[in-house]
Image (cartoon, rainbow, N blue to C red; front, top):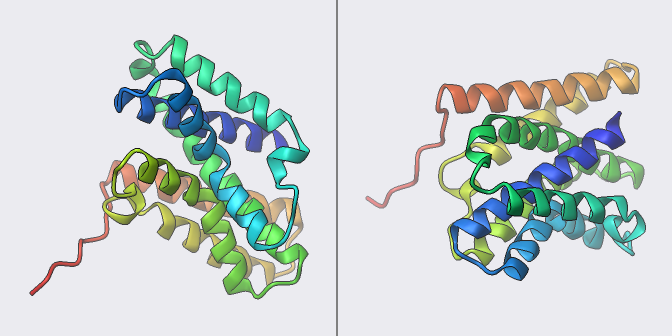
Length: 200
């Protein structure tokens, strides 16, 4: 189930990236590149930083297939996808929870400090979007209005707090991902944002 959610999250991120690129009027190759970096940019950066090479998507082509499927769906049904933005948002939110957990676990596997593990989880979930926005010549969304990264950090804190209770791993993953997903849904519903820092 964890692996399946990871694949679904990858596909959703690919569709999200592709739609962003199409809004910028990029050609099909540009759309594909943006879809690709949105999906695996964070995980690639994480793997390089912890010395895990070849990086994840090079070891498992199912991720590449998921990106290509997401890209193709976005390209073919781009005019109709506005009707499915809620579904796409839900997949994106699931991906956020799953990618955060993957980053946390990668850090734990090599015995890193919990603070570094939380940073890896946040990077895995968010930095594909950061790279996407930079390539699209935008200020990254997570730096200006959405509390995307903050949610990942909160999820990481919950994860390590529950880990001290020696819960079963499956239950630990389930609760942490649910916390991330619920906070994300509530943040969008109630328009929670961090106030910008202003001079003077």
